[in-house]
Image (cartoon, rainbow, N blue to C red; front, side, top):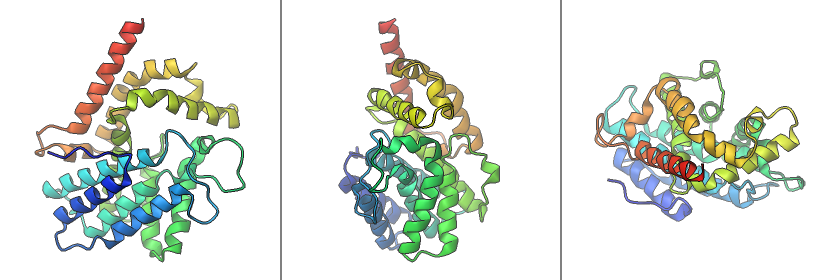
Length: 284
């Protein structure tokens, strides 16, 4: 059973991810992962080129670390299950850097003084793809590997057509699906997910203000209360369907033991949804 990791602390998440990597690849070198965490942390702190520190309140560093930890655990389960295609060291590493950079599209340049990074919600995936290319080129990553990372980041788009992503291989595609899955499960399984829903709404609302008529998600909700009310439906009708069908059920690699064991992420999300329903019933 996994120990409890504080995803507010990169100093806890990074060694855990590196430990998971070593458990999968005992002869592997963790130096790339160490560098990947260092690069991402610097970006979120505002220590990369002319970018400000992250100021989006929901899509912050913790959100990224939640997904990254989930991703590493999912990839470990994949390896333990001896699933096909066989997970390689390099695709594990590229998957981790991809999820570390998947929301860098919320970062603002230093001369961008209006609003927060949440205003980029509609285009944050494209901005993250561009940011990843810039950063990884600076770090002398191979062009083919940069494209691989970009393809994986594309999997996090809300309504992305996964069949349109030009994956280089079936392995790359499946790691991309693992990333998309971890992005959803990591945040929804957080113990404070319910409490942070109003913050998520505030990001949608800001994006709507900066993009009038172009932010359908915000227009679905009359306020944070309505987003909260619709969250159980979002889980049951959208997220579960997406991770099961579009992402081909890779979430099952989180089952311990595989394939029929307990899935802590799904269980915690179910608990969050149950708690949310109880709150809604009391407020009715």
